[in-house]
Length: 134
Image 1 (cartoon, rainbow, N blue to C red):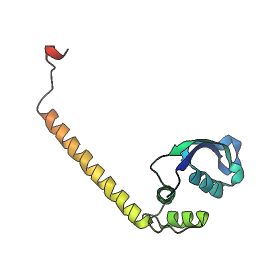
Image 2: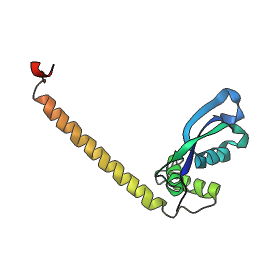
Image 3: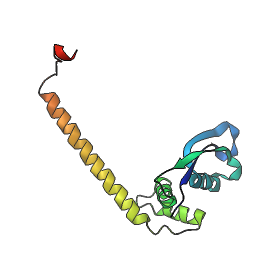
Image 4: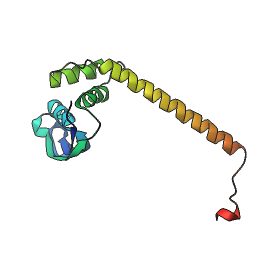
């Protein structure tokens, strides 16, 4: 059983410059470690634990980081980055990414259907509320 993912707030000093600080709010401990790897240990400041993510595993978080920290359409560069930084193999990444893309497609289809229903309802005229509900 995997442990809960710890969540933090911190400041990232881009290039180590205090004048170029960026707040990172509600990020995982895994992302803190990734940011240290990318920007250097001294670039991450004011790290404060604020809680845990219930229902989200470390594996899910690492897959999500591989997706978000990628610039390739196939996400290979993000996957390689996470595998290198954490010394792991993301065996389930391809399935995870496919399921995420399917869920996003379904969400977009549902949003489009709702928009069409709303447009159809609006095309019938303007609703004027009766005096009974005022």
